[in-house]
Image: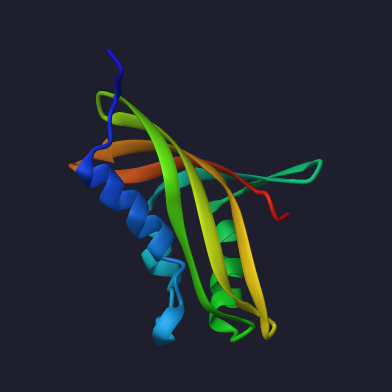
Length: 138
């Protein structure tokens, strides 16, 4: 049986995922904070133009934390704007539309995209099993 719902704990988990990349007001994102959102061998896939790139959790985290802590990208945040969730027992599939903004190399930076999450509830806590995403700004 599938259920199209918005679970409060799942909503909170996804909000925490987007918030993990926030560096506003001097907040410093950490690799450990982001890695804790994923199962150990999660798969991350990014569509960029005509190219699809498959990443490990570490390959996903390292360049993002480096950019967010380098002072090149400041006052950055991203947030979910709409979503659709289906649950299957302890599994969930979520399609999230999101927006993002900040200051990149002293210039205003904004974008939007889609993230597709496959999640598992393990020991009462949601974790990302796979993540696919596309940023409409490239």
